[in-house]
Amino acid sequence: MAKKLVLLDHDGGVDDYLATLLMMTMDNVEPLGVVVTPADCYPQPAVSATRKILDLLGRFNVPVAESTVRGVNPFPRLYRRDSFIVDHLPILNEQEQIRTPLVQETGQEFMVRSLLAAPQAVTLMVTGPLTTVAAALDLAPEIEQKIQEIIWMGGALNVPGNVEKSLEAGQDGSAEWNAYWDPIAAERIWRTTIPTIVCPLDITNKVPVTSEFVYKLGKQRKYPVSDFAGQCYALVIPQDYYFWDVLATTYLAHPEFYQLREWETVIVPTGKSQGRTKIETGGKKILVMDTVEQEKYYAYILEQWAR
Ligand SMILES: [Ca+2]
Image (tube, rainbow, N blue to C red; front, side, top):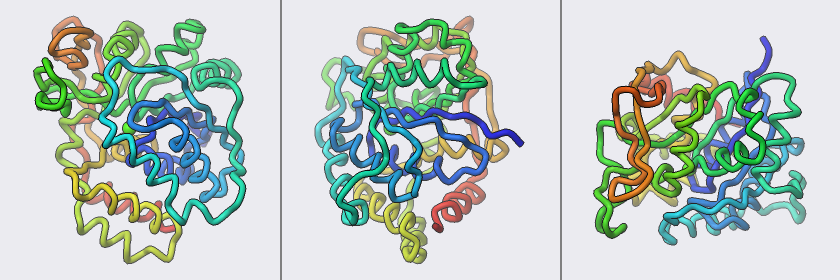
């Protein structure tokens, strides 16, 4: 079977490194590269950590690119500083030199070049804001034909968002962070005809990172990937943490674990609901991950990380 060509665009959160780790283990995926969108992170440590993770996996041929886009609503500094912690974990720092290449062009330029050069249409796996994709489309609108689909972790349809009212003055709490960081960019993507599969908070709320799961990783920590993943989850377990990006990314390898449901939605671009993914008749038709077979999902990631 031909492999699925995938370009990963992540935004440097703890969950994003783990999504990277998972995607690189997938036999049915040919990764074209990893773009780091500087949202839930600081860009320098996020790019560095991403390259070290690819080194850890021995994937020295997968290039990493730093996107230079900026969102209108920055992530809280407390979230973003995790990128420094992950970049300094001992397991990522056994070697003096990073081997995974950092491309010299910007992430958005790299996205354009990779899509144009690809022999067939490419899946964009996006686990952060849609800003880099929007910037790439602005640079070269013709790439729209080369995008097979966007699989996106983002949005909140029938549940509250995760942008807290108390943290973000004037907001009504309906937005999810990846959409809220840059609602204009999300709206830009919603105006395209690119098939879009969304993993919103509606489903991720049902798939928590449990202590039980982290202890299972601990039991297989003789494997470097499990050891690294366990350390990352230990870092975030005091927060209410869910499988956001990792759940979305698993879809690439096992779509049959999920039930999808079609919704017509719009993105609210401005105002107190900015970044809300609102169900509205006549809006963009998107496919939404509605349910997942949780036992199979947990078993799959434990198995993939046993290396
Ligand atoms: Ca993310």
